[in-house]
Image (cartoon, rainbow, N blue to C red; front, side):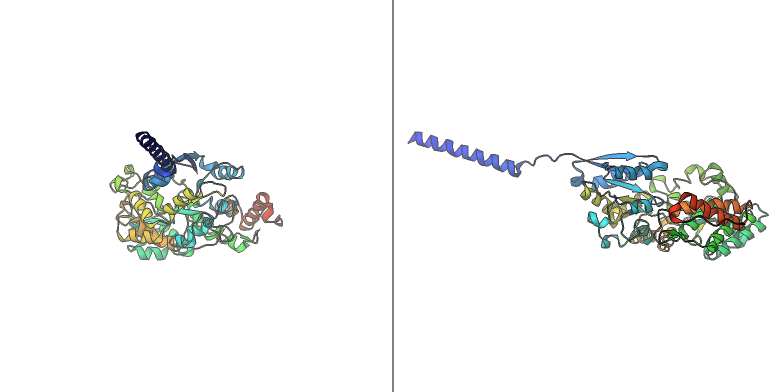
Length: 447
């Protein structure tokens, strides 16, 4: 009996061991997940810093076994590099683009629609309309989702407005700059009253930002160049009129001479939120363009704002997911957090003074009245909200930027008086034909 009891006990222990082994293999100790490499492509490290600061700490489970790999290329070759890598099937799981790249990435068949990765219309409802347009293809399918919006305004010198124009109220100045006719008239009065000392703008290239935006989606019709001679003449003549009163200072944007002219000698310039950021870490000092070293300048704190005629876009960052990624769930969660999640976006906006792509968040931040010293205490969100909400245009084509640049070449020559209007119009059409035969025919030679 004792022997039978011992055998029975041993049998029970062996059975228990088998059961424990089975339980363990079925979830007692979870097997380690394989490490996943997730590749993100950009032209700088700005988004890398945002990912490491805001996204990774808030998504520990999702990112536990994810290794982020960053791929960078210089900005001047970046767009082509992305498209070539996608066409060749290289693993890219997420990539960024700016407003100039947006039409190309939206038209690329290798880029997934947001709906294909599980991000739907209702999640995008609070985004600014213009960012959605720029992120969409010609069929209205949104592929890119922006986390930073960069609507533009004019910053003008309030002291010059009072001294040379007799204007002290911001609303009156906005009215004076609300149309191209009144814009030119202000430049003329400014030149006359200052004896030519004060220029309207640093250069004509800044002015062209409004032209580009006004013409988004309008250069072509049914895939063919359709802009009329009257429209061409309209933009050429604006530059010509401003040149005739010597309204441009002739300095390149962001050069040292540009800073100097803004401090003394230029009435207004084209600006976006990224030019005017001020973060708590800077102790209310303006960063990016107007660094602490610039605060001693006579212009600091004397700028007020006005909507530019027609408005414009000056930057922005869109996120895209390639169709062939094997990690759509990770890509979707990153895009959702940075471009749809109000709590996430508000936290980032407050810490970075980032003008995020969410109208409701930006309204909430405007109500906080966070002062920016560049604007004499006004806050960036209150300044840019009207500009962002008022931007409306058609979906641009992949040709828009190129055609606009070709017209600007003629605008500079015509503005200086080097050629006549008829010749400038012909040159424009001829150069478009030479560069893009597929969208136009050879223009008739002028006599």
